[in-house]
View 1 (spheres, rainbow, N blue to C red):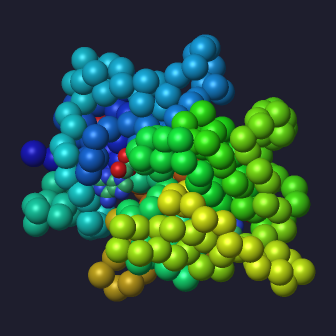
View 2: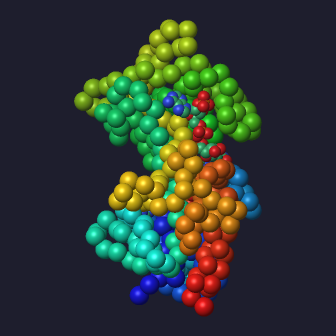
View 3: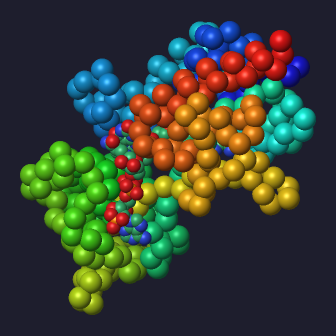
Amino acid sequence: MILDCAIIGGGPAGLTAGLYTTRGGLENVVMFEKGMPGGQITNSSEIENYPGVTGEITGMDLMIPWPAQCQKFGLVHEMKNVTCVSKSGDIFTIHTEDGETTEAHSVIIGTGSSPRRVGFTGEDELFGKGVSTCATCDGFFYKGKEVVVIGGGDTALEEALYLAKICSKVYIVHRRDTFRSAPNTIKRIENTENIELVLDSTPDEVYGDNMGVTGIRVIHKDGESRDIEVPGVFTFVGNDVNSETLMQVDGKFLCEMNELGQVKVDLTMRTSVPGLFATGDMRQDAPKQVVSAAGDGAVAALSAISYVDELLN
Ligand code: FAD
Ligand code: NAP
């Protein structure tokens, strides 16, 4: 059987694409998601900018109903890691880690992005032993203790606010003296008593013993170094696009990418390859928001429906 549409990734973009393709009449739509559906927002301790959702809710709370809504219209979720998407003639082949292949007339890809490493000494060695990229997952381990947050974007500041409610003190280490976060979030940071800003400073080395992290050394732009004795270091310095599945055996990408490694799309989420649509954080100029990723998923689904209709009729 050839699927009408294969969706790769089950974040806000993939799930919305699943809702619109199935509800819009495509038959045999499978969403390949290697983990639990929901995407990276499920790691967020708070979301306050999804329209119509008020009150304090976590990213997980937001995403829990989405898969069931899609399944109601016939979306099938296969918990598989896609290793490659290729195309021969009009048919796409989805290769999965278990060695199986699935064919599809169209593909909507929304594999999102992954947290970037900062690059200081000890970061890799102590990852999971005090160095973390997820406050909701690991924050509780540091209840009543001091922690360091690295970064100056929306994620770093929002997660610092979350940690400040659990931990006795949060140091935010940022390489500049201004933040790139939303003004309202910066105001909340400034009004939180147990947050100390360590500005114009970069992490140099995280160190520890066999129990895990015991501290981090940061260097001020003037060259002065400072040791902050903490058991936990949270890094939030941006994300890299997950585009490996588009890499072909000849070492080239299936479709055109921009210089930042993001998939080039037009306003209907079409890529340079007919029948392949890219959505959410992985596409060029993505606003990197749940609402825009969901919007992309809907747009891509409508485009895929037209494409499959024209291809098969
Ligand atoms: P993702 O959410 O990254 O989903 C991609 C999915 O694809 C994942 O589930 C992944 O497992 C799957 N996948 C990847 N590769 C494969 C593969 N090879 N095979 C199978 N499956 C695969 N946005 C907001 O609007 N408001 C916020 O308050 C907000 N807070 C955030 C807080 C944090 C901590 C983070 C990290 C992000 C936050 N964002 C927020 C951004 C938002 O989460 C993203 O913009 C959004 O999730 C992007 O959706 P997506 O579907 O494109 O990708
Ligand atoms: P980001 O906006 O790219 O910010 C990354 C931060 O890390 C920046 O402050 C950057 O410093 C710093 N940084 C990067 N590399 C570093 C290094 N090697 N050493 C030290 N510091 C480093 O990433 P993000 O905060 O994860 O946000 C990603 C996207 O998701 C953004 O578009 C954001 O708006 C969105 N998002 C939105 C919300 C929301 O709407 N509420 C919440 C979370 C995320 P510089 O500032 O000096 O570059």
